[in-house]
Amino acid sequence: MPNGDSQDTKGQSGLTATALFGLCPRCAAKGVWAGLGALAERCAVCGLEFERYEPRGRGMYLVVLPVTVLLVLSALKLDDMVQLPVWALIAVWGVLVPLVVTVALRFAKAAALMARLEKEGMI
Ligand SMILES: [Zn+2]
Image (cartoon, rainbow, N blue to C red; front, side, top):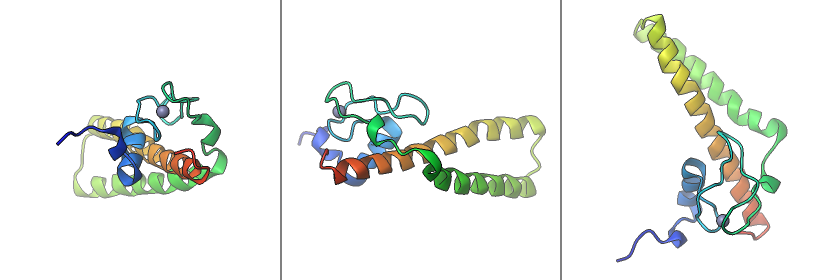
């Protein structure tokens, strides 16, 4: 049975593929992300405009704020459980915070992008 067909990347798995791997929701080519949390202008293969559908403004605070609160609570809980040295705390949180915030932002932006594209019948 053949696998790896781009037709399989719709719906739930399409959201993950777009958010984590930067695959175009329409043609599954790479290149949705221009930066860590910024959408590229358009798909290089099918020409689908991502930037036009990018959620902007305060909407993303609804994602970043709860994630930040969770990270702060996790840091406090971890500090209660194990007393890590300062260099370990800097290493752990210096990697974990940008990673978690970026992944959360990408999922939120990919979900908003796909919902808007679907609403307009673009995908
Ligand atoms: Zn495309």
